[in-house]
Length: 562
Image 1 (tube, rainbow, N blue to C red):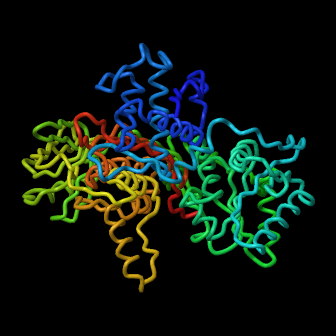
Image 2: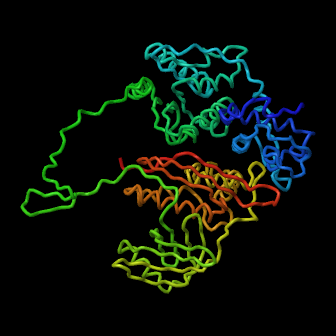
Image 3: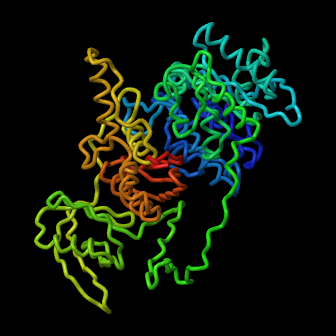
């Protein structure tokens, strides 16, 4: 194969940076394969991630002659970052597989990856689709082939939406002709439609989650667009068969859907779908009269009708909150069965850990009183630091009428990486750690066994995989996101919740050996939707190989009392 530089696909950095990850992933596979026989990036052992990054960065680490200057000049750092994101995407989709037979970051292109790269450049001819009818919403139908009966149901839905309900439907049976490219049709269909109606069945969910066949590719395109705009309502799940638990793809887990599973389906549910497509949501009842505030003072006190009776007006808590660095610490003691999140006034973290805590509530004052004489180790976390430590000293100080606790700890362990961790034939140890991070931060794929109770081998394989996801020999095992229980305990105060959730996540990320370093973590709560933005690095295994990077951006739905 002739070597194909990135500029043979994208002449400018701006053009490259505008591409989504599925498109970049295909280009990257073709680019990587063109190194074969030309560079140590591609040897008999496969593709080397660290060497490829060095080529992008124009770093001389014994890879042979380098270009006189980076391919995209001053924009090369942006290009490098985006191409490494594309590499990570290929790994997550199973298109690049870690070569466990080799020491280091060697990868091979999977059979699915070979097929995927063959479908990328050169770009196919565009599939012809009519311009959207003026004033009519355009909706792409995404569905799986579940048999003739299901196909007819989808066809009937398409015709009713199009003929009777004023929705321009993009439907492969109408718009995909012999000679057209199926994958390009999917890409354009998702990109150019106002909505994507996802017809959910157990078969659809299985193929989407496993990235199998046409549904799998379409799911990649949808996931990429969701990553750009988490809160979009463009993708509408419509339940046709099974239950929501068995039929909803993982990437749509937080989306509200429409239930058309009945025979015949509910007209009320169908109207819900039409209201979304046409932008005509149900209207609330008329707004009532403004309350009489004439008896309320400007200080927030409210005078009741009884003479001389004064009550404090309850402050209204916000429904939104965000945190990118918590003012709280986490103290976890098994000896006392205590989990505390005190606000820190001052801190020092080196060979000794010193924390000054404001006893702003009687509860905090009581908790620290109980720590006197504590003998066993406990977990201490503040900022991005986590330690297993022993209590050294504890002093209660009253200053200016305020109670402060000055605490010193001797750290016993501050490093929790596991050099003995393992992977499987299809998933590396780093990939299992990334699954752990996503489970913790987004509650993706919480612990569940799907094999039949009589399937001993299937259960054993699931148990092995589950133990690796949870964290083998780690202090903390991640079975599901701790945010769910924390929201139940502290969700009535959104600001307090995100502060506690932030420091709890830092502790769990390190104690489960998921990452060694945390570059940033931002939590943003909007009612019961928690948006997460995380970047971290695992421990470095080899001196000449960069540590594995874990980047997570997404959202999860928390329990709501509404």
